Length: 242
Picture 1 (cartoon, rainbow, N blue to C red):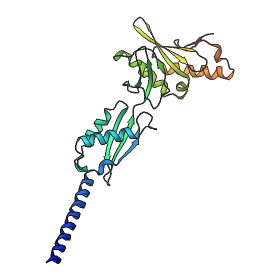
Picture 2 (cartoon, rainbow, N blue to C red):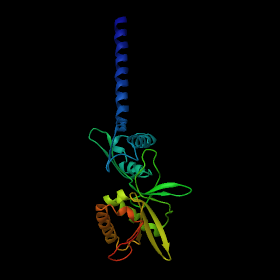
Picture 3 (cartoon, rainbow, N blue to C red):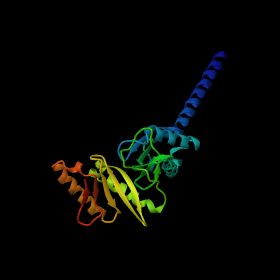
């Protein structure tokens, strides 16, 4: 009788162990999405770290009860990440092995606004974004506050500067000059400490082409530092002041 009792006892223990193992495996299958693979589409992760994206996704999954992978709302996760102030776009996917993946496009600053009360960036789309503790972007600086539809020109000009390798290296500041109902712009340079009088954005391509010709010629004979202002407002000519 004792022999049968021991057999029964060990059988029950074995069943309990198998049950606990199966339960643990089941719980593990519900949490297999914790492995997050993050890719940054537009270069280095200067403003949004891997740790930040990973933490946001895990927090969101935990808040929803970490559902099975087939029930995860990928679009909802994408919208959640796009709500981050440094993220322009996010695409979420699941691999065949059940790992969660994220392709992140960071916001790209093109202008830094520095005024008495605050400092912040504007990105390529004209959306406000905060400064980062991790990285300081090398973009033109303005002290003009930007607001409303009327200031789209300032963002347009900033994008033009940042898309041009020569201007990106040379221009460090943008000043807005209001002249009656018109709005004109002046640029501050890195080399030579010059003021470039740009005027409005009409014929902007021709103005930039003239500016490049001017620098190309004056750099050859090292005379570009002799000029205090470079005025591009006039057709087919550059007016300079020494």
